[in-house]
Length: 508
Image 1 (cartoon, helix red, strand yellow):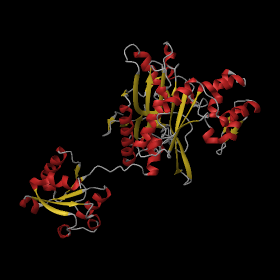
Image 2 (tube, helix red, strand yellow; image 1 turned 135 degrees about the vertical axis):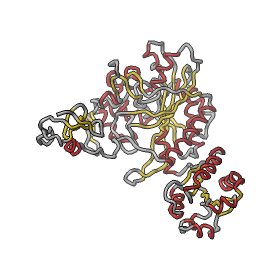
Image 3 (spheres, rainbow, N blue to C red; image 1 turned 45 degrees about the horizontal axis):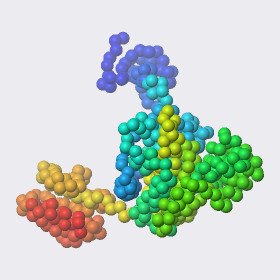
Image 4 (cartoon, rainbow, N blue to C red; image 1 turned 180 degrees about the vertical axis):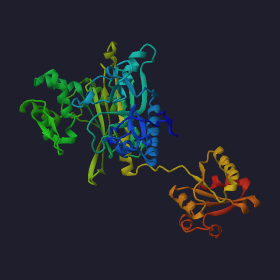
């Protein structure tokens, strides 16, 4: 029989024998058949076979609400202003890089693709989402070394992605804010980065009792490894085990350095395979903290000018990434917050960094002096939300009550006048019931409601209610007459005085 086109172009009547879903005889011309992904299928059966997607996120990812975004913007702006005061300028790099340009520096070597999210492009080349902002910076400097002014001081904010096991406060996508200096060998610049982070914390309302910036040096660890005969191919694993001291404690580090450990979820973390004597030498080294070198002395000489900042030596700071070569530092918050189980815990690390003098040479360049620090913006925002350090006020919102759909043109004129004066506003397009519109204003936390009907337009006036002043009374209003009788926070103004009257309320 001839094909007959149905209203939906993907659905036609056709004779194809039996349905591959229900095996029903399809020789009947009344049977609907769909071409789905190039395959012929019985339409109704296909619909039943399809499963609706679940409205959930993959583990390690999260949505951010308006308040969180507002706090993040305020925190990022504060960080940016302090960075600019220290002479840094902004740079932006893309989210994707060639996988080999990023390098294999992440500690989660047991994860797919070495802990990064990777895809193969149309040229069969592997590209990956950046796992930090440092490796892309190294690529940029190598590509533009002759053209950039050195020292090169840059800051950058952006999301990074890590294919690692998620946990409380640990996400697979998170925002970082980095500040790096290229072309300065002196440890003074490392110390300046730590001072800058302390200034950021204090500008965000934290006192020296609320934070601690710890520093150490990779070279003193290399000296110890030589003394206790740690093979070169085990150093990276040893450093990663030491880096977990804050999470697992001394006994946990001992287990990771030797035979391995099992966490509360039952996951087994393999051990490095060191002897008990070697692991005890490392733990003893952490406890004593009596090692130093020229870089540390220069670093501390700079810090002597800032005695009131909470910046201290701690040999346990090693940082988990392989590319660090000298000074390393980490910033932690010392106050307690509630974890996802409602328990009080010390918040912990929110920033870290160090010197990486050999990273740029991977691209065929000479060793280039480089150092930087990275702030975990999302973790910092979460901590500040818990402490309620930042008062983030929402933008004022004016809602124009829709009393008469025939007056839409007038409502639009009011809205346009407000917007042209940078006053956020919206026209209520939902129910024309006054009570429901006022309840909407309350849910949106609107600052002002404007009401105008035939009577107001005829008189050339507008009725304005300051919702913060008359909030409780407004909840009880359901009729226009009740609105007029309610005086709390309400005024009638001349139409031409709209902007001055609204600004007067907003700026109170």
